[in-house]
Length: 101
Image 1 (cartoon, rainbow, N blue to C red):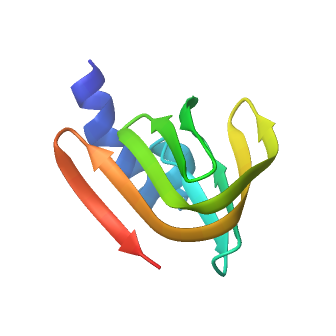
Image 2: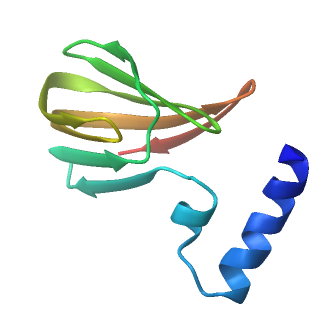
């Protein structure tokens, strides 16, 4: 059943012109330069220090590295992080996608 849902969601998103992040339960990441990052639709905080933040998502993990991190806001599915952001990684089942800043 879950496999069927994963196949139908992209089609529904396209057919009804719905945002894919909502339909497919993907995280939405908004960055302002290297100073702020706002993440929606995450499933919880797994690692936090002044140099690393790791969040669980439905597809794996989101890892943010840098320095001088401060959590400015944390809600059940939203987080606002300030600091010097150097790298954002998406870790999914052994595969890693990196966004270098």
